[in-house]
Image (cartoon, rainbow, N blue to C red; front, side):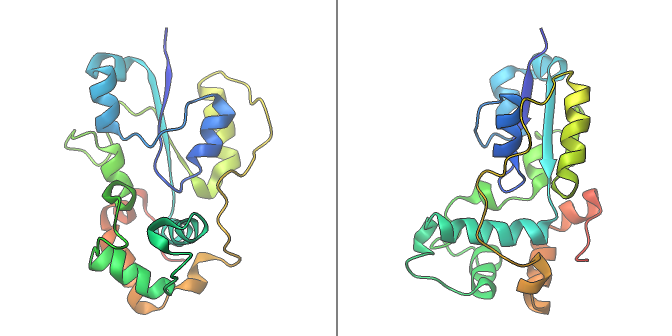
Length: 189
């Protein structure tokens, strides 16, 4: 029997999507899943993921870390621009504490296959089209939606992602996520 597995990239709606389809919560990448399942089962089962515009994902990541006080960011806040510099450029361990959570989405999806996305991943949705892509996923896996789309793990930001950037921070994120931008055709627009 085909099982359903989610490659849950942080800050891409994975908790919400997993809950809707009854997939257990865990930040697992394609490499982890390949080891866990084996190549044959990985190819046989249905594997999906969602990706997000890197600039938007970074802002969400920052505000989630403030909300959850990761690396003391709520108790000792620093500006978004400083955090981007410290975490993505300098990789300061005081902020860059869980390297997996700072990786490019293609690194989550490649499974050491030599491709930007492992060829046995069956579906990649986009956060920007979350409702539409969840409906498409539901049809593909022949699983009716059990509930309307909740928003779990919402960050506290109030504005669109472009508001938070200046030229320097936008460029740092572009460099940190160059392969994601190329593979998924994202822009800062």
